[in-house]
Length: 96
Image (tube, rainbow, N blue to C red; front, side, top):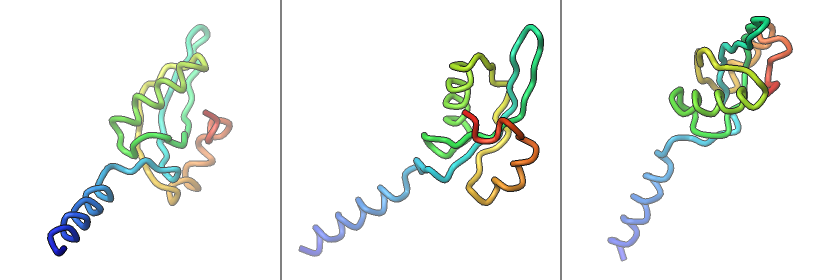
């Protein structure tokens, strides 16, 4: 019985250690649109892993669907970083 409890505890710990798929994860990014050239800085809520690498693919795909090209994901952060970015993102704050 102790062996079973130890295994269940180990499985639970490993599940909690996996990358977060969070509603409380955001990325700020820079994007462009061509002819005429338009640039914007924005903030997007992530649906996938809260990590910069996977965020790049997600942000790129969501922007491309609206005719924008991702230039760079600047950072990935939690809700504590939203207020400081709201003013700079303007109309592109949580738009996509």
